[in-house]
Image 1 (cartoon, rainbow, N blue to C red):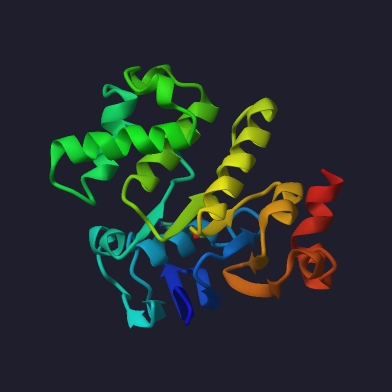
Image 2: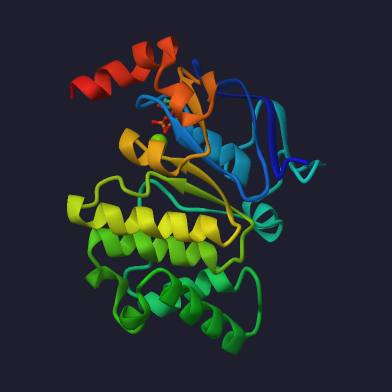
Length: 240
Ligand code: ADP
Ligand code: MG
């Protein structure tokens, strides 16, 4: 059975159709890439899956259970976590405290939350930054912090919105390795990513969006040869 099933989901903002009858599935432990030009509806799709927005039509299911329109904290309790395209760490808090905020989704016990936070900080390579203020982190480290905060909720499905976006080139390979390591632990991932080399390298399947619609869904090797994907997206990126 699918872990996540998105079926015929539509979301409008005024006259803009951000998602139009979007359907796709994610199996347990699968890593699915999401590509498409700016404004294609990728982040909106994440909002609909994680409860930050409610679809106008269609259905989102987890393990076959309808979760459409549930609030973000309910979705989180069902094992879905996300990072945001625009980073929002609590700048005045330490790195550890930031991650404990995530851990409190899974436990009310302070000691347990602290232990979880330390464990996931180690896992993302920020173990030695735990007592630092979040504002002192580099962009690459902030991405790791976001990941740690999401992981602290103990998800089965993790949604990453442009995990390598805006980070310096030197930090990209380490972030990719981290995503692969997380996937290797059995975590299912849905990953928005603009770097096609990265998408090809990590994805088992790729969903391509354009103007809110799914224009292709398949293995990466097929997606890069898909005429519609090339016309809508790849031609442009490759030229650039
Ligand atoms: P992507 O992440 O693929 O760049 P988005 O999902 O952010 O695309 O946006 C898809 C479309 O929906 C865009 O036209 C965007 O301007 C619009 N949109 C997204 N969120 C909102 C919102 N909260 N209010 C109004 N329009 C929005
Ligand atoms: Mg986006």
